[in-house]
Length: 65
Image 1: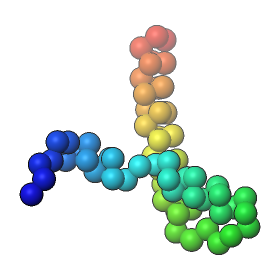
Image 2 (image 1 turned 90 degrees about the vertical axis):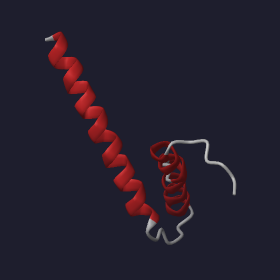
Image 3 (image 1 turned 120 degrees about the vertical axis):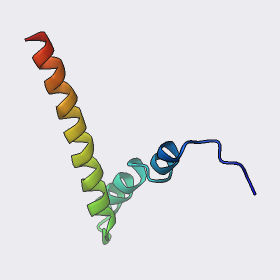
């Protein structure tokens, strides 16, 4: 049995990266192929990243203001 070198949270993030669904969606859209479910995964990642970025930006803005 192989040993797990990553903590569970890091392992879950590594197994579910944001880039592959986004790239697959863009590739399908540009080649006029069916997108499938990857568009929803890509949008979920995008909204999640934007939400976290917004929270951090507002904290920095309020600290400086």
